[in-house]
Image (cartoon, rainbow, N blue to C red; front, side):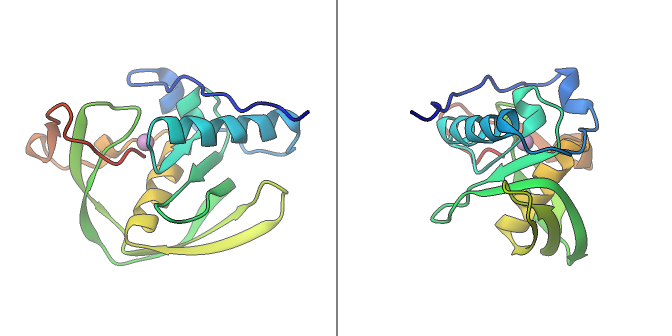
Length: 167
Ligand code: NI
């Protein structure tokens, strides 16, 4: 038996669900497990490296991240507890298709969260993983990378087919 995972539609700007502060997950029930499975499937179908629940229309504090060559990470109620450094990065978002911008992200961060079994976890990330963690945690707070772009010359339209890493 077992449920089939399903690809859900990705919400794009200006969908208001992307601007909501998502709610804390208090019970990890079957619907939350199914949501997580579907988020993983949706992220993979979009060739993304991360996805937050509001991006599939559910304002809950859940994110999934899958770095190239690594196992998928499921983060429930993630919070940044420490950050260090600053670097300029180029960033895109599956909810803002066709654009990319330059913003500042931390070099290194430490996050606490629960895994999908509800156990408390702590993880550290640097460079691209730190960027993905900050990006997804922004999403569950209703923040998008374009809010962090410092000027119109730091946001640009992508040439079709150029390829980008979606978060
Ligand atoms: Ni995004």
